[in-house]
Figure 1 (cartoon, rainbow, N blue to C red):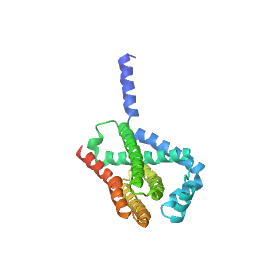
Figure 2: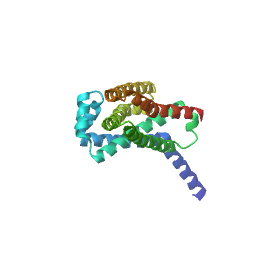
Figure 3: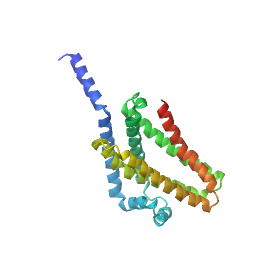
Figure 4: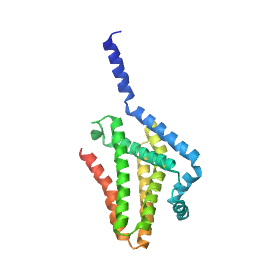
Amino acid sequence: MSLEHWLMVAQFNWDKVLQPNNWLTVLFCVLLFIFTMLLVTFRRKMLLLFRALFSQRHFSLVQRDGKVLETRGSILLLVFDLLTLTAGLVMFCTTYIPSPMSKLPFVAYLGIGFLILLLSYVLKLLANELYSVLFARDKERAAVNQYKFIVMTDFSALVFPMLLLIHYAGLRFLYYVIFSVLLILLVIWFYRLMKINSMSGHGFHFFLYFCTLEILPWILLFKVLLIV
């Protein structure tokens, strides 16, 4: 066969490999592997994390232990959380605002989404450090960071199976369930943190902090996506 023919075959196979469905399948397999490994290795501590948002007693156990997971486990869980959120965000944008999502390869948006979420997570941790220094709330700083990590973990664990059903079974109505779960977790998270900060006399400052750094950036991001 001619060289031109082999080049055409190679190009065809390469384009097929780069299809969004294939990238999502690989990503879901990676997520399933990470989550299974975490459950097998840290089952008791993972269950403690899942319950800590809804139970003050379990959250007190998290605070008492400091680091609930080992460093390796914490990093793996953070990667799982960020990759799950990335998959959900990219899938939603591809479905409902396809125009800006057609300008780059699908895998590029997965990489960009992961980097944006990772950068956002790091910047908000730094902002919390700065906020604790400015308003002398060092005692509340650890609780805020722990609650943030717990909310991400609970949300990711609940959303992951729903993303599988959306992708492979086409159950798009589950996006409404996901947003409902997100809203419920945000309300519980906000209530817990407001209670902690109000007891220390920083309720109003925290309210401004929460709205500015936790809510406003996502509103601006969606506004940009709709304009592009």
